[in-house]
Image (cartoon, rainbow, N blue to C red; front, top):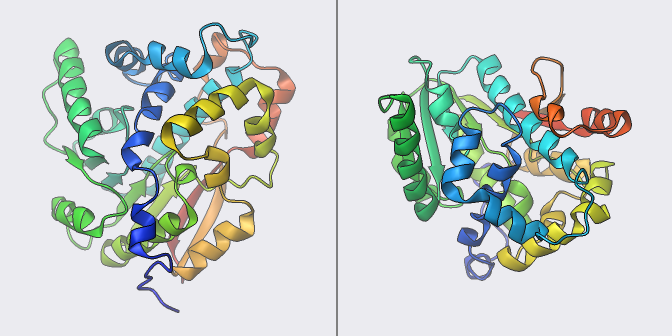
Length: 308
């Protein structure tokens, strides 16, 4: 098995894909949708970054959507955030590397545990904005900057950038590598590079790769994304990013399994909504029993480790 994968698509072709910086604005869209939940700092973040304006632009302030049409999306985002954080705690690791972390400020929340080393990464402009945002919010609550929290600029597709920040971790101690909402924006050749880099980190440190991004459009989740209630927003995102969320998603579960196998990895799927946390956004954004049941059935989180 070739564990030192080199993408079959030439580097020039990868470089010709739309710039990853065009994806960053979606972090602000997501930030607005988190405000109905009790996710730490969600309201403060959304207010300071103008998330409402981004949401209105994407969905359309004069949209013909029913007010409740996108309630399921808020539930999805709260479940995604909370299940990923819970999985990190459950893994028992003391080192976390989060890629494309956006403005969720998960690191600020989780670094309350002084035993945890947390490294948040994103592209340079987003990282600069996040540092300012974090400083503002810490000022509100009188929180000193945690010594165990590090913000770094890094593109997951650049091994040189990844290698520069690995010195922040203790050698030989396992790492949880996490991200949410990243893989669906990447093309197949980019996903190969991501899997190669993650496998390389896991071979060096041990640990686990945890993400809700391993979703395939052959499942019923595809019906949510194709629903007319979100198609307008999806089209707007595609126009701004040059990348189609639906096209970027895995087509089948077999495609996911094959990607992992090529890089010496194996994954286990777990339900995101497992009863271990409350979905507080449902108080403001209720869902029908059928919709909630479908999300509970379909939303999964994958824990990926080196194959035995």
